[in-house]
Amino acid sequence: MKEFLTRTATSVFLALFVYFGVMYLPHIYFSLFLFIVISVSVYEFIKLTEPGTGSLILIYFNGLVVAAYFTFGIPELPFAIFINLFSIGLFFLIAIKKEQQLKSFVRDTGIHFMSVYYLFFPLYYLLRLREIGPEFLLFLIFVIAIGDSGAYFIGRAIGKHKIYPIASPNKSLEGIIAAVITAGFSGWLSIIIFPVNINALTAIFSGALIGLISQVSDPVESLFKRSAGKKDSGSILPGHGGFLDRIDSYIFCAPSLYFIILYIWKTM
Image 1 (tube, one colour):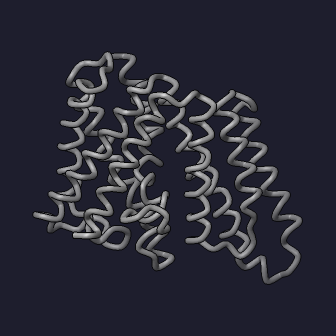
Image 2 (cartoon, rainbow, N blue to C red):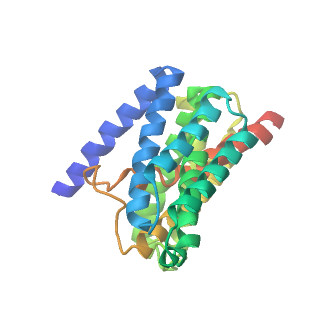
C-alpha cells in the first residue's frame, strides 16, 4: 500500500510538472529542461552499460550539438551528425593507448553512439512536437499513459501469451492488444480534452499506432536493464525507478508521432 501511494504521489507530481512545463515554459527553457532530463537518462544508461573506455563529457557535448540543431537549427543536421562522428572517432583514437582496451573498443564506441542516437536524437522530437503546438505533445503523453496503463492492468489480469520473455517477462500478447485498444480510445478522447484539428478516426488510428509502437520502445530499453541484471535504470523517482524508466516509451514514439503528423495528418 505504501509503495502504491508513493508511486501515485510521484505520478501526480510529474503529471502536473510536465503539463505546466509543456504549456507555459518558453521555448529555450523547455529545450533546457529536456536536455537535463535526457542527460540524467544518459547517465543512467552509462551506469547500466559500463563502457571500459568512455567520456560523459564527450557524450554531453554531442548531446548539446543535437540540442542546438533541434532548438536553433544550427548546425544543420548533416554537420551535426559529422561533428558527432568525428568527435567520437577522435576521442577513441586518443583515449585507446593499450591493446587491452581494444577488446571493448567496438562495444564502447557503440555505447557512445547509442547515447546520442538512441536517447538525445529521438527524444528531442518532443521539442519538435511542442513547436507544432503544445496540444500535440499532450496528445502523445496522454496516449502513452493510457495505453501503458491498459497494457499493464489488462495484461496482468488475463495475459498468458508471453511475447518478450527475455526483455519483459510480464508483457503479453493480450497486454499489447489492450494497449492498442486503450491507446486508440485515448487518441479520440485526447482531441476532445486537448483540441486538435483532426477527425475522430484519424485520432483513433494514430493513438492505436502509438500504443503499438510504445510496446516496442519500452522492452528495447528493458534489454539494457536485463543485460546489466537491473530491474530499474535508477532510483531518482520514488516508486518509478529512474528517468530512463519513465521516458523509455517516448524514445520511439516521439519521432513516430511527428512523422504521423507530417505524413498522415496533413493528408487527411
